[in-house]
Image 1: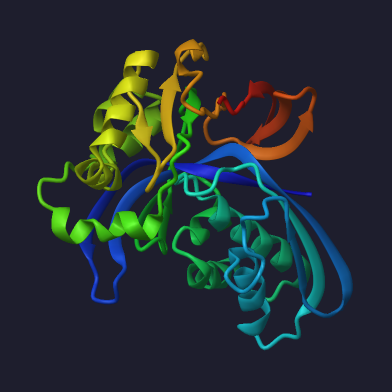
Image 2: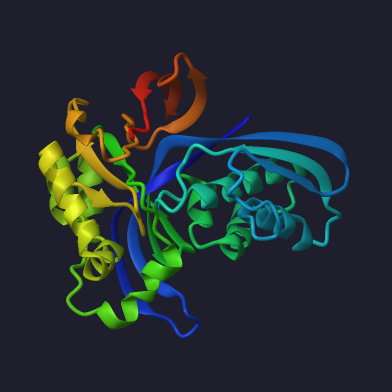
Length: 314
């Protein structure tokens, strides 16, 4: 089993659009232990990727990012492809800004390289960038300041102890469409103070963290869709907390210092509820009821057993 976690963005600044169509970014990314599950089988013989997914809406042809990662891994080194079967059990929502697909691709690249050892870590990150801009981050899967188009990764110290609430509206967001808003709406975008965010994470200072988070993509969406801004305002009123969009959305997140979230007012908002501890390396997941799980998590030499929940409310 491969447990492929998601991420959130703690500040995202668009600096400019490059001539090649990509956008220069400056952002902080943090792994979150909400996972897809990939069942992986290596047949030990030449062949191709057999890919199956739990969500029939996800393509399994050449458009699939896991298949793209598999193809690039072998083809880039002129190594014969190996017969491998992957069943992708999707838990991370699509078009949420949580990087689920990028994570799937990265974890497959890591698994392949553990077995076949065709690349150094630096070379693997270059392959990952060809798959997608967020994929190199998941190769490391550590809190980091990420710049360029996603290829420049500076790991940072994250001592944040706050728990997180993920809020996923039914509406999804196309990353490409959101970035297309930048050309005509780039004026007056508020910039996140990235250095202050990095400092706040190191010092476990939630108050300072909340003061400095901004997301250029969130602001672009609100300029184009006032109803989505209204939804955020409603959620903040219901929770009595500041919430933020992750990446290009549509998933919001909020922080909580004591783990107590009153979600009673959110029963019409189609919410993912998830209590997590920041920047812990995922190890094992055991389902103990329909909505409750136990996760065994590792941070350095410390092992934590953490109970958490997530549920989809209609």
